[in-house]
Length: 142
Image (tube, rainbow, N blue to C red):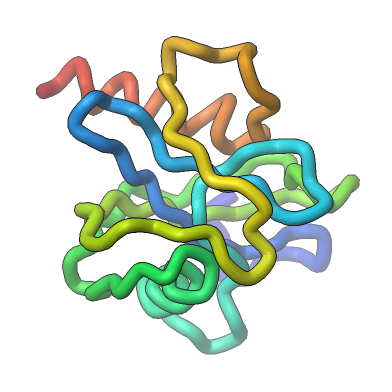
């Protein structure tokens, strides 16, 4: 889905693809949810996606992010993990990690996930079907 005007069953989000030196992926699980996913969240009406990402990372993980330090990876769609019958349309960004992430707000748990360990935790569809492939492709290019 690439429309700038998603339908009412689409949730627009901005999310971060953050990896460490070992290639592990930073994932979070929101309170009351079972699936782990990229940190990030909903884009407010009229809010640029980079600004939404910086706001969400500050609220969820206490990270100060310079929006200009993010690299846009693309816009991707997948089934929503926590809202049955909805799709997410995600602007994904990679960014360097500065500071130590600490779960806050609605974040119940944070993990560093080894992409080779698929099947060990429940992953959101966007993470499982798209982000893991992106991380693998980026690792192959390095």
